[in-house]
Amino acid sequence: MRELALHILDLVQNSLEAGSTRVLLEIIEDSSADTLTIRVTDNGRGMDDATRRRVLDPFVTTRTTRRVGLGLPLIDMSTKQCGGYLRINSAVGRGTVVEAVYRHSHLDRPPLGNLAATVKTLVIANPDTDFTYRHQVGDAVFTLATGEITEILGDMPLTHPDVIVWLDEYITANEANLYGGVQHENC
Ligand SMILES: Nc1ncnc2c1ncn2[C@@H]1O[C@H](COP(=O)(O)OP(=O)(O)OP(=O)(O)O)[C@@H](O)[C@H]1O
Ligand SMILES: [Mg+2]
Image (cartoon, rainbow, N blue to C red):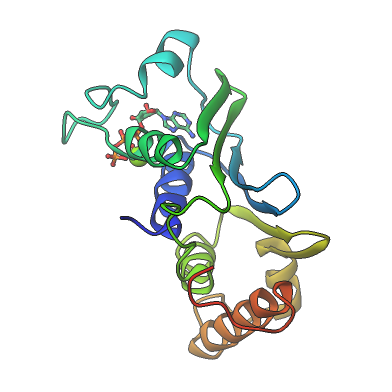
């Protein structure tokens, strides 16, 4: 079982490989609908309709180093095993929205995993990407945008060791707040 954080890395990686300069990652936990939604919206090159329909087939990839693309088929499979679905909306030259929906309470739903490490890595590894993270649990929301952070930091680079430590603590604390201050290792 893969933690959802790994699928999230795959999705954002796809957006970056598609040449996106702006990526929005949303995680929405809705207990009344009993859903956990992961949505990645980008402004990359997009996919035409035929490609979009075929990408769930593990033999489709635009990679030249390896024939098989596994990111989306694996996510598709894991959502279906948990009473959910994967939906892809895309427009060539405009961008893509990939939405993975899980039944929140499903016994087989993988845990989110280490979101703080995942988000921190995405921000630091892609300092030139306008990256926004938004996590909603019921009415509580935590958002983090690269643009805001770089503004606060001024001349200090995102990759400065002090910034990396601060980012980790900042995200971890805010993530815990979403669950009423209780840290959930396996939410
Ligand atoms: N956000 C996106 N924008 C544009 N094209 C995308 C996007 N996400 C996926 N694709 C297209 O769908 C194909 C399949 O994606 P998938 O993640 O399943 O495999 P991959 O990225 O090619 O390989 P892997 O994820 O195994 O490293 C990609 O090669 C790319 O052509
Ligand atoms: Mg991929």
